[in-house]
Image (tube, rainbow, N blue to C red; front, side):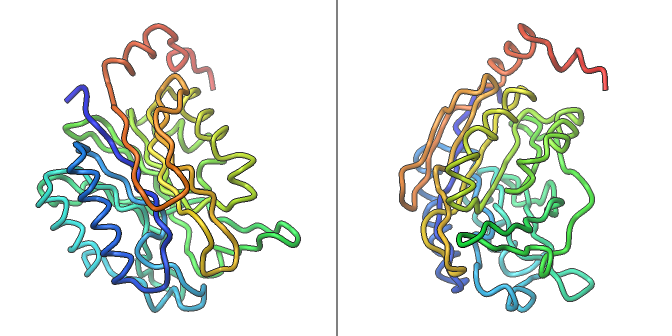
Length: 267
């Protein structure tokens, strides 16, 4: 499939998992009705509560959340990227995990967030993701019927070497489910997304959390789809919603042919 519609889902997740799952399902269904055949949810879409409670909300794979999403993808006949959710690990922390699910309901790829967000912006935001999240170690890019899709999560966006590895593994589309905070989002969200798209000549699908969250600060929203030339093809308004844009692999191929910078790598 050389051309199709993709969707980025924007949410405000709470600490009530069932409500989050119901809202996510409703938005995914809406995107599917709109014609999207690839839908991406935001980071920690299914549960977002107190950090110390994260380990109790983590699930195995397969587990209740994955089985629910596999059923949804199969019912709608779409590729579904599960944003991210908490996966059980072998210690007191959880993985922050994203899955790519096929229209047949099969898990095609699993990615555990590698770069963890530990930051202190005085009087604004303090986050210590590594206290409760265990870092992953492996990248994830897989060939599907709609192109080679690479997975990343939020803070990964600041590490260009990850995206170059994904492209070197064939990625044409990369998901960036996020919970980008307002201060850093206002300053860097769009410029980072456009930079990663331009330098790697890929489509980026970047759904974000929006609005006040349970941690006492706000998330930036502005969920985006960016094309391989760095153009913002879609950007969400300031509410729970979804945005759609065309993924055109012929256009991607033309960009790479006319400006063959990926062939000119030296390092």
